[in-house]
Structures are given as C-alpha cells and as structure tokens.
Image (cartoon, rainbow, N blue to C red; front, side, top):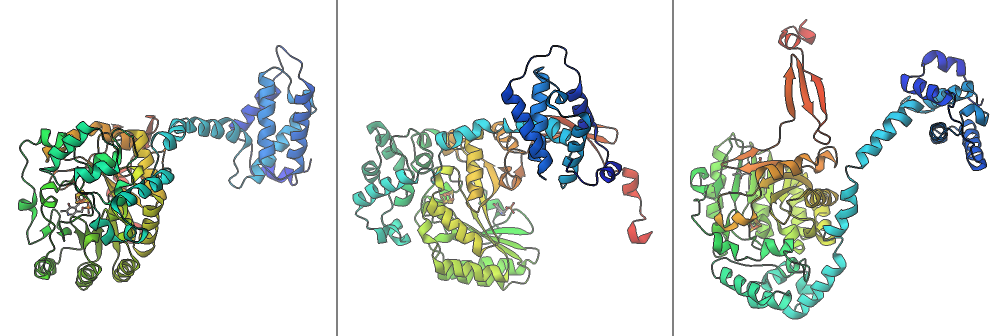
Length: 527
Ligand SMILES: *Cc1c(COP(=O)(O)O)cnc(C)c1O
Ligand code: SF4
C-alpha cells in the first residue's frame, strides 16, 4: 500500500455507513457467476494501480464504480481481480484522507453522484432547447447585422448616424409605410396596424427594428413595439390612472414613505405596446422645465422620511446629460436622500445613447451616494452584444443594474422563455429584480395578460435550477407592489414546520426556533 499513516487515519475517522454498505455489497459472493472478459480485467487492474499510485480521488471512485458494476453483472468480486477486502478498505480510507471535506467513497459514489445526476434531468430539456427555440439577440447577432444593413439602406442612414442617438430618433419608424419597407408583413396586418396607429402612437428606433426576425410570426420584439388590432378591439373603459391618488406633488408619485418616483419626462426612445403609462406617454413629447423639477425637489427636501428617489418617465436616459447631471447633483445634495435610481429601457432600445459623458456622470454620482439603473428587458432576443456591452459599462460605473420585466403572453410566458431571459440578463451584468404580472388597468393590452398562477409556476420553477440572484420577485401592481410568490410553508406539526422544495416538491421538516429560548430575555452579554 502506498497510503501512509494508515493506523492513524483509522483511529481518527471510521468508515461511514455508505462505505461499509458498499464494501459489503462488493464482497458478497456471487450467486450465478459469469466469466468476465480480459478487457474488464485489465481495466480493473489498471484503475487499481492508478488508485494506489496517485493521490487523486477520481481513480478510486472510478475503480469502485467499475467493481460495483462488475459485481452487479455477476462477473466477479474484487477478490477475483486480485484485490483483497483489506486493500479495498485501505483505498476507502485513502479517499477520505485525500478529500478536503472527508467525503467517503461510498457517500460520493452511491449518494452524491446519483443525486447530482437526478438533478441534471431537471435542466436537460432546457439546455437542449434554449439556443434553438428561444435564441437571444447574441445568438441571433449575424441575422441582426443583416437586418441592420437592409434598414440602413432603406432609411438612408450611414454608420455614423446609426451609431448616434439623435440619428436613431431622427430616423425612428413611426409610420406603417416605413415599417412595411423594413420588415415583411402581410397586407392585412399592415391595414390593421394602420387602423391602430391612428389612435396609438408607434415609434421604433431603427436599432430596435433590426432585432425583429424576418418571417417570424408573432416575433417578441414586434409584439412589444408594433401596435396590433387587439389594442383597438380591446379598448373598453380605461381605469383612470393611479396618478391622482398617488401624486402628492408635481411630477412625483409616492406609494411608500421612504421611496418615491420623479416622472422626469414623458418621452421614450420607443413606445411599448404594453406600456402602463400609455395614456401619458402616447401624447406629444414634452420637455419639462427646471421649475417643474424644482417643485418635485422641494417636496423631497421637505420630507425627511424619503431616502430613495427613482428618476423615471418615460425613460430617464432620454433626458440630456446636463439635465441628468443637475438632477443627480440636487438629489445628492439632500442629506436624507441616501440612494437613487434611474429607470430606463434605452440600453435595449437605443444602446448608443449611453455615451462616455453619461457614464462619467453616473460614476460621479455613484461615488457620492449609491445609484442603481433599473431597466426593462422582456425577452432574451432584446439582448445583443451591443446592449450587453452597454450593461457591462453601466455595471462598472454604478452600484447595480436591475431588470423589471413584465410577464407577457407569447413573449415570456413559458419556463423556457423566462429561464432563458433571466439567464441571459444575468450573463449581461444585470440582475433580475421584478417580474410584473401585466396590469388589468389598461384594456388595450388585455390580450397580453397571463394568469397569475402561470407566472407563479414559472417563477417557482427557477428555484434550485438557476442561480438564486437570477430569479426575479413576482409582483402585482395594485397601488403599490404586492408580492405573489407561492408559499412553500406547507404545514406545521408542533414546533416543526413542513417546507416544500420548489424544485422537486419534496417536503422537508424544519424545526422552528424554540419559542421559549426566543422569549428568554437574558441574552448574551446581559446574562
Ligand atoms: C415601483 C415604484 C417604486 C419603487 O418600488 P421598489 O419596490 O422599491 O422597487 C416607488 N414608487 C413608485 C410610485 C413605484 O411605482
Ligand atoms: S419604455 Fe417604459 S415608459 Fe416607455 S413606453 Fe416602454 S414601458 Fe412605457
């Protein structure tokens, strides 16, 4: 044996029950022996020598695995291959000694590896489908570049105009005639869009238009940006905007004592078909005066409970750099304001807007008080190498970049689509934050709504299967944000709580804190 200090190890840590059982199974005499081939013999001898000669765990595991298979197939016990029980035991001790966490060969082989294999099956279907059925804009980049070339030619844009924000806005697609030139749409659909755009505003940046896949029916980018007949068909009684009951001051919305929003503009680079603020956004673009912002800031200054201010719109990044700089400086100058947020969809609708000057402004403000950028990405197809790079830069200069997605029928309402969205967002330096159940308030997009339970199942399916910080919180907006997660507390038996693992529905018992110990006033240093 090459193992050293064998006696000492034996004294220190006995073999566990998994390993004892494994050894017992291996050395049990055969009932119906079959001859084993020369190949199997030399394979076993080879592994045995490697297991003895090296300080690696893998040859030991592989050897035991092969011996177990051989034993099960009735082709021989270890002794038939010249390995004694004593030698097997020594290898088992050696495994325990090598492994930093003292994992036993029996534990790893008969418990951990099968458990890991069973868990793998939960993601196999996702892995085989995610890049084929729900490609991201990164997966589709070649096609997007082709679309871009075609759109540039049609709109008479050069590379410089394409790469500038004013260029994107100047050439924004706002008529059916232009849209028809850029993407293939059946005649009936064009007529229906023309009907809708008479009452709803359409505007796509040429960049966002390039994300639409030619020939795709119900392309998720198109669904979010091109109004469809349903919007007019559904237009019933619109529930009045909540603004009146939640706007205590000019431009301000406040649901909570510590957080408020400043709706700093009604402009967006593009208009979403599912926009909550449809009525507000749909009107003429407006630039607000410093006087208006001044009144919002005065309200904040006078209310010391407010700690977190969210500058939103519309889209905060539509504001000129000088205005953003001024607003952030004003907020940073208020003692009780400790953190800020900017709400913007521009990194996915017109990433070229995020210039170095803006990044410098964000970093400067972040150095004074933490600033987060809150964005909205609803499908992996919205994330391209360009938007990913923009998020990378934003994440370097700010405290966090967070995503608030809206659960939308046909766009992200399956496990496959949502897992892919959340993983792609995560890989693009953005953390999934909220997933909103699409609001009941606007009848114009009733066709996008997804039942609450469907969203719950999708969100719950992510636990244990994708990284925890890539799982959003599921929310209904109803005069504030109300969490919709399923409770995984199944029952209580005495002081034990029965919990459900969302990924397997397995129930586990979880002893609660002892209420008597908890109520004990004598604690730590006070004893
Ligand atoms: C969303 C929102 C906030 C921020 O809510 P968080 O839960 O802190 O993200 C604050 N005020 C209003 C009016 C909002 O709509
Ligand atoms: S970016 Fe936001 S505010 Fe602007 S249209 Fe889309 S959902 Fe509405």
